[in-house]
Length: 116
Length: 113
Image: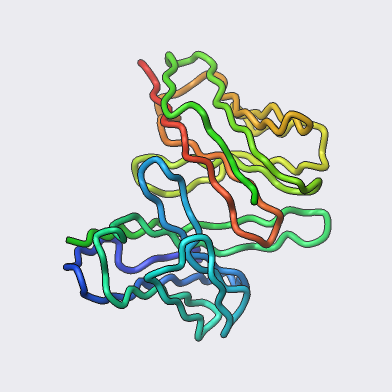
């Protein structure tokens, strides 16, 4: 049971290049999330998905696209990278606790992206 | 919209002593969840402790405990017998269940040997 994994762990891009970050979870969770973490700002939600084939915008969606073609995978794409997208990106999936129990988000190890 | 405020960007504590990290939040909801996450230099987000708003009893997990004041919308974390491994960024977070986590800006905790 690997939990939530992210690929790659590090990446350097030039302005205008594109790339895709892959998030995978083996816990059969329906909900998945992409956050970005910037110094002094905590984690902010970019996009999320409530199930296979669905996506929705979060707090800071501009410049990103996502896809959830398979339940276990949630992809985050940057079509034309900008220096403002330099950040650490975290993926998370949600374990629903059911009646009387709480839901818990499990986080991947993060991807550090630098856009020059 | 819900907001989470951590007013202490940095804190330090002597090893074996006790430290309290502050968190306040703003919400109009009555049922919600509050969390403290630890982020060590490895970047991994680790759940430290959680609190359900409908529970009056403060949550505890070994050396970690919270002081949950619902009326004041305050959720502080107390770390007892601080250890070197406790050094990390600590984030307070809020959510309504299935929805996204709303994070505070974090408190960097340094442990002084």
